[in-house]
Amino acid sequence: MLPGHLLTLIIFALTYAVIALGEIPWARIDRTGAALAGAVAMVVSGALSEAAAEHAIDFHTIALLLGMMIVVANLRLSGAFAFFARALLIRARSGFGMLAMTVAASGLLAAFFINDVVCLALTPVIIDAAEIAGVDPIPLLLGLATASNIGSAATITGNPQNMIVAGFAHLDYSSFAIHLAPPAIIGLLFDYLAIAAIYRSSLGATRVPADDGLCTIRVNRPLMIKSSLVALAVLAMFLAGYPTHLVAMSAGVFLLFTRRIKPARVYRLIDWTLLAMFTGLFIVVAGFQTTGFLAEAVSRIGVERLTHPATLTVVVAIISNLVSNVPAVLLFRPLYPMLGASRAVALMIASASTYAGNLTVVGSIANLIVIEQARLRKINVTFVDYLRVGVPITLITLAINTAFLTLWP
Image (tube, rainbow, N blue to C red; front, top):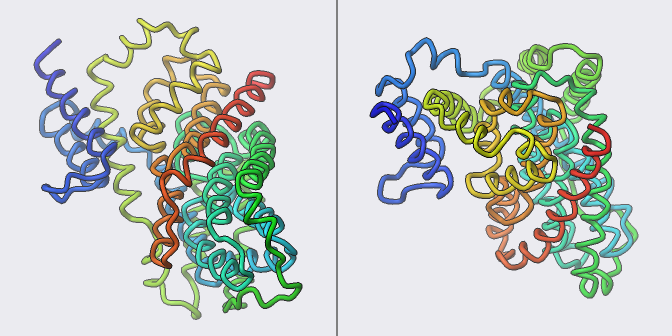
């Protein structure tokens, strides 16, 4: 191995090690900082030229994610997410009913509006509703986290890793949804059944008052109507086959023209650190690709063996839980052409990385959002609490997804 390649491998390994750990306490650097540091090191070390580094960044994916973040920020500021969740929760008549409504609301919203944001918006609503109704909040919060991950697998805009895969595999919105929405819907049903069975004692002992006083939601009605109409138009144009990145950015820019809300409030809700991490990781993975390590690994394992649906599912799931699903998907980006560049492979990478996020607390950012917000409200969802639900749900959804994509590649 050439010395330059050895240095590139070291830079890559250190970057992904920090991403896997989450941070280096003594250095005060997090995942985003590690990605940016790794990107700079790739260029400074000569692994990539500046032009090659710029070319490695998938600006279409960044634009799609940024545009959707602006649309979702407007929906969140208007109170649309909380309003929708409340409309479902007030129709529940028992603990089981509230769990069903939680799974339905989070799964449906996450399919279109990024699962992390859905968890941010709905966690306070779920906690308030559980407190007023006298329902154990833990199964509801677990339902919110797991269902948002499962629902997000259904469409390109459900989560960042789907956007990345759709970008490098050139998948259109309708084809993606046609193949991945059915297993996601079945997965949501099993998600409900698993949590209902595990928490049957606490959920079955509760009767919810038959009124609409579960929680009071303040909404900005004009903004909610405007942003909801724009969101529906965006989804319609996605399904019609228009370029997703242009549609998302056009919608985001359109929503910035308003007299009702200061743009600064929207900008504060955009996850700039995630966009920066993506940019850095695009460059880090491109640098890693120059070593030829990935090509050699695929050659040794064998393309046919690695592209077998069950094998690919297991590999993607393991890597996703080691370094988180977004970095894992970016690692598969240069592998995609080597694996045949088929739609079936792309769909498996996107869906398996998403379902794998339900395995443990740290498997998905959405899980951490729910648990951290609950902790601030003095509700302790332990690692074991999550594992009891996460393991069976992950295994079931991965099996359903693999079977479905094997039968309908």
